[in-house]
Length: 459
Ligand SMILES: C=C(O[C@@H]1C=C(C(=O)O)C=C[C@H]1O)C(=O)O
Image (cartoon, rainbow, N blue to C red):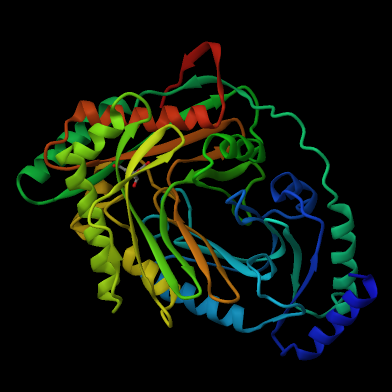
């Protein structure tokens, strides 16, 4: 595409723009990997986001054109209203048949929804200024702005043209990850006593399942670059969706990075897919066989699948599922997995997300009682952990993942969170081992090497 035709498209788009409209201008570019390209795109922007399904759909976004942050019990409904309004005001200068051509709102929820002690809002939604997307040989750069002041159709076309030229792919530098100099194991004892309490609640019939999480603090030799972590995750967690959420108005080094194995929901042309994922073993040995044969794990898994099916039925859907789970490998972990799917034409994505979140894979059953117990038994705010995170595009396709297998980065500090489902028959020792396994796999996948003089970290 020439600059002249880009300018014509921008001017035609601007003529179709309503008073509060946002113009989306896009150009195809030579295929490149959005991950290493993000720093070039984000030079003056504090918000950065990555959705890495490589070799499938991979997206990088940066800059805030519009945003909303809110907390409280109506967060899903109000977020949906914002999404509807925002998308209805977008005018695209180009066709939007392919996923990489579509502008999208990106969003992250907190687990509990009320303003947590750690200041994570119930939901944050962003319409980014820049989006770079690639799927196979399709690669598009999009620019979104509302016009006014110095921002004109011409200035947008110029900015997009310049940015597209600047994004020529150069080979990524060698991976350079910091070493781990100290880590905390102080979660062991409080975790074990919480599991014991959860088992009492389960044995006396108050709860059926509770997913208790623990946090491990890591101190690194130098501040971490989240893009490096993502490059490492891509290598070690090819089957999961890697993500980076660096919220607007936060410090440069503050970000959530992870590789989620679990779709809360995925909508493509009205077709809905959800993952029932529960039951964990390490890869290797006879772990997989045992997982499939274990009554305790099958029971724990079935609770999750049934709850997802019921949540979708409560919204008038007719979900289908396999009768027995399969094994799904994610990095060095193996899970029991059941795909749940249905047609969901005409359903609003965040209405479905509200029905589903939190599933008993990350909270427990009954949901309300489990949430109350999580608040009192876990000694830290969950923040983004276990909550939905993802995107909704112009054509109402959407992908929301459950934010697990992730860490919160702050300079040299990385806080990892992982949990395990407690049901009748669980033992505190085995559940601690499961959380330890998840935490150590995360460390390996982040490719953080241990310093020879590794110190215990207090806290
Ligand atoms: C809660 C987590 O994982 C969830 C719990 C699982 C389990 O209890 O077996 C398995 C997969 C996830 O649905 C986590 O990784 O932190």
